[in-house]
Image 1 (tube, rainbow, N blue to C red):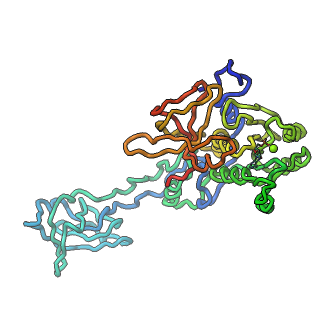
Image 2: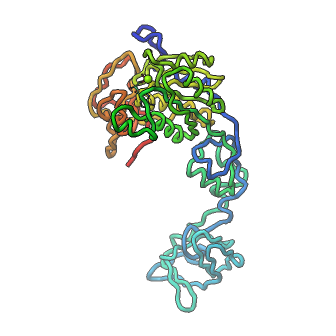
Image 3: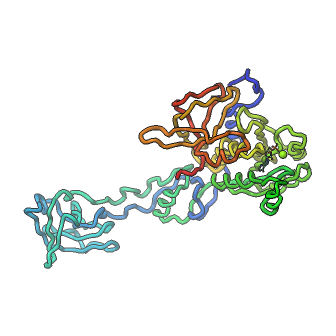
Length: 422
Ligand code: AMP
Ligand code: MG
């Protein structure tokens, strides 16, 4: 699946993998910063985090029950219970008054410290208490069980999170458990989002759209949402008219950004002024055109030394090229260990014919099937202007160049989309 094809009709366009590798080689991890834990979700930890809080901090009970010495309850049954006096009562938040004296037992709640010497905690269901405060045991199966040992989750000095690991909800939990209200991460990329085209309107001109005279700048909003989903910060650069001066002015206003995305104006139409503006600004083009569908007019370069993506204007092309090329690049900038998401395997429900000269990213639904791989089915017509093919999709089915047909029932790879798993 590498760039390969030196002989196809688009031999001078770049292949998918080579395009992605080229992009990744130009995107470097951003600086580290110390942030509040509450704002770190989706970032990557910048350095190993080591435990200094031992968890759990004491041997504690996994059950509401009664701490015992195993020898004292050995052989207890419902017919022939063992009866022992209570010497202690330990709710969560309290500590035992001392070690468990042989021949006595201690009542305790889940999480409460287990008195020294106890071998196990008999769950409350296997006991009863009489009015004199003695405990009857009907079973001895818990006699050596139900104690969670000090430090069994994290001992002092153990690595809690490794550099490059994502701050997931679970990582937030572990850091909170460690008492860390702040965490050092790589900062979120600020990414300028420019839309281009005289036909575009935004919400403030929506009546023009309703009247059928303009179309909504859906790319600006969808790309901003993708950026947020990827953990980056979108910086809106608005809608540029198809004039080099307006485009240039808006791109110049992105000088505080770490990268810029511009949609439309990358094909060969007469009114595409984006290229002229980029030339004026000294953009160094790294590649233009990739052997992919949708999105072949993809442009990548360095603008003021920072990554610049010229995405196609068609709404599906813009969103697909984001998922395939930008999300991994942003993840690298954010310091994540893996740039690309693991692919999902599925089986095609029907045959899909493709064109062998391009790598295709088809919008597909994944239907879960009990005990088998999900069934992969196209969301419907795959035109690059059919944005609902994207909103209906669970993922992007990859059909690499060189393949003209995928048979029904074949195992295929799907790039998962931030999706609707309901
Ligand atoms: P272009 O790349 O300028 O040739 O545009 C290709 C197609 O995408 C045209 O149908 C445009 O109207 C449409 N398009 C361009 N930019 C946007 C945008 N920001 N939002 C929605 N559609 C767009
Ligand atoms: Mg245009």
